[in-house]
Length: 501
Image (cartoon, rainbow, N blue to C red; front, side, top):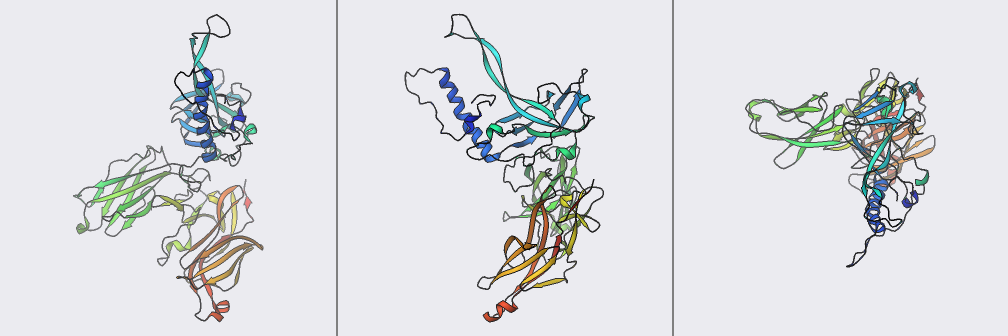
């Protein structure tokens, strides 16, 4: 494959071949090229099929400025790494400067920026370091040949809106490679050359753990407090190397049995344990934070180890911060002392960012965004859906025998009671306007969550209910008539959304 990617047929599924060495083998240019192509090709194959296309890290600190001629340049303050759709790595060093170009290869000028422009990275390669060839098979003249290939990149500016599912993975055969868009979107720019944060949030980060993970990067560590002499003690500033905020911090107390008791903390929110409190104090300007331990009683003072996790907010859903006209509301079951800790898949955290962590793993959130009687989908105040039902308190329950028309087209239907399992299990199906959406096998204490892509938002929670109890009579003949599921804290919104300008 050529370094500039022109021979895209090489990305079709094919068998790899490598050099076989033996004494006396005459190595030609072709042999050395095959050596490079073998390792590059396998790496590109894994990149594009396992990870896909998108940003791995960086690109959070950008500076654009015009030259005297009006041509725009960009400085990458923190650098970054991205993968294009062919699996090639685009490595951007810290503080490197690049001229912004158009798709036609013409320098982009500030006066052309009459509306938000979208910046893309594009892999390119350049040859350098001319050296004299020892021999030339074509003639007897001395020939100067490029000695190095620099894997470089271009910055392209267009008014083309970034496509959805930017980080899609290609099929094994990669038949789409010939028409694939090699550009990787990384930022949107306003007409004053400032970064448009809202539009930039559409860029897709590649996950290093799983597609379900909703945090972009994470860091962890342990703070060891040795025999504190005062009840309130604070660690030095900790730098998780995630850049500036918003950053979400979770603290856990490591016990003598190597168990970790955890709680979620954001910028000074306290987490209570028996005999002490843990809290974080976050400095958004530096991206550093303190871990603080407060003992409630003199007799509880002891050496302790505190595990911390820090993660950046998910920018895919444009809910990094609480919007001024949005009220964050807890799901009702959160404040019920009889309900063990439950998190709604794709729910919002206390900061308004999507998803929370538990024991260092992302599960969901415990808040939703509300404007009056409407829910802001994924916290976006411009996309609203009316609340259809919300069971207000722990005394408001629904006894489900066979079917429940919840409202707004939502229907819950019991398919089967299984009393042979301990605890009993019930199969429940969720339908919307006669269309079956999802089937759940639940037992007492489970939480049902249904999410859907709607109104241009990804993974929006639309239906939530809590299984408070399951009653199955001992007489088999009565199971079909008397068995029931008791539901609490049912919460659902309409699928008829409206979009505000």
